[in-house]
Image 1 (tube, rainbow, N blue to C red):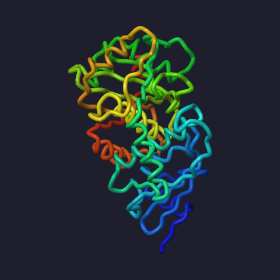
Image 2 (image 1 turned 180 degrees about the vertical axis):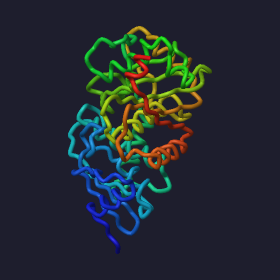
Image 3 (image 1 turned 90 degrees about the horizontal axis):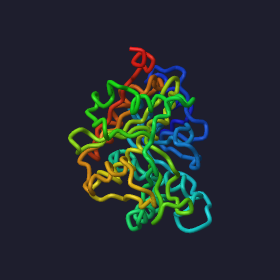
Image 4 (image 1 turned 45 degrees about the vertical axis):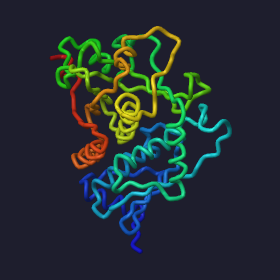
Length: 325
């Protein structure tokens, strides 16, 4: 049996990518055995962008660069959580992790696999989602510009959605400027939208727009400045999956939540008269990227998304240049 340990994987990746400064996450088990990359995730209750939690990002990067990897198998230790099955804040990160595993199996069915001892755990959870009323939340009021706030990334998002008089992104992506939204909520809850009924932790898509023909959605994950975390891949895969499983899939896992608030412009547009959207495009928009996030990685992500009919693009922007034009 030929085994390549973590240090051997790193050496090979540095050569294959040309990135001599490359590092692998410390708290993630990685080895290659007879063409199978074995990945053990030890950090389940963490931000998806953190290296130790962003398992999708790392297995995609390694698969893109190392031809000796034919298959990937992910394993993990199930956490000890007390309480009602799958429901409640304590389950949120773990539930999301199981859903992310499921999502990888449908994006990359030819080479991504879950360890045999955990397949039933993941399958049972997806069956539970499909069998229950799982609701996506929505903002209680329409978002307004926060361009004057100090948080740089939120300022840039606000500039694109609310402040840009030339509507650069809308024109580039053919988005209806009246149906272009900022910080669209993607928290998922069981039967009613209450903290005690949490299934996935709260979160939000940076920007979400409806195409001018009214049939498609454009999801945009934005990073600004020197934020080059490779975890942007994991984040984009998760948010795209939730949007797909709510608004596009013919067999949706999630449905509109019944918040006791008046209907907002965003809610009305996304509800779409109860009709499904026909297509979805996921975009990553950043001022700079992790040095390992090269064309090979981009092409592998695009190939995976195509399994669900989703289009993927990755683009650069220079905020100060377009702001001062």
